[in-house]
Image (cartoon, rainbow, N blue to C red; front, side, top):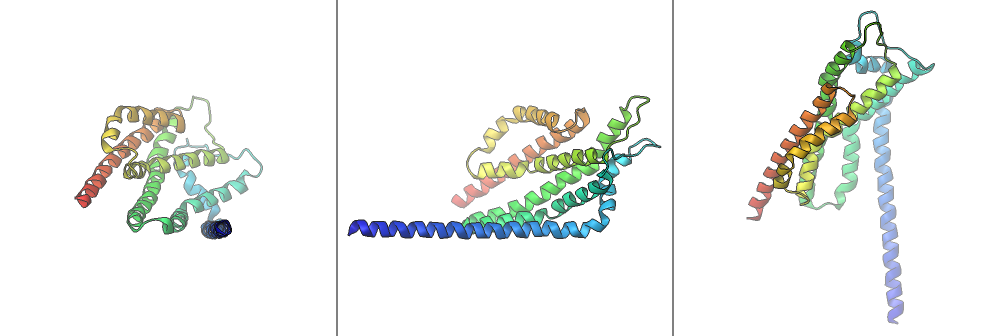
Length: 257
């Protein structure tokens, strides 16, 4: 009799787990579809202005090209496809708050009330920092970097960049700087989870500085300007993250007292 009851309870638990998993998968699909719909709506709105969008993204290089030169298209379909590809990625960037909100809405039901209060400011801060990194790349890094490349072009060589190659190049830098500016959020999460402490992070400063320049060397073009423009903000954001972590620890200790 006891064995039959145990088997019945086990079957009920398995059925409950399967239904719970199915409901989570349905919820995940719904969130992904809403995020994709947001990207699609923005992309459709940008399609009529695809040429203007590409011109805006290419402005940092076009403004530095020598007089009489221009960008070129080495592939047959590039003049048509590259502006649409640019519009799509701009739509992804523009829809990032909606995408992150959908991720938050999927995860939030499993969090405690205290965790929800902490998570929402972190989500908003991560969005702002990502856009700040992309804006820093566009307004600071690109003009200096392309100016350096133009000045370093050997005499007798015409600098005419392919539009497809340019788009792939700047997309990598946009994402690199956007993610690099998330360092304070990553530090707060690590400290909040108890994995590291502000004191241990402070002791790692020399290694972090060296690692920042090594990362700049790997992720940016092989010139000192772009490497330094990634490494220096990365190290400063690391310091900001340590300060924010110390404030978090002090608030936590005050609440415990």
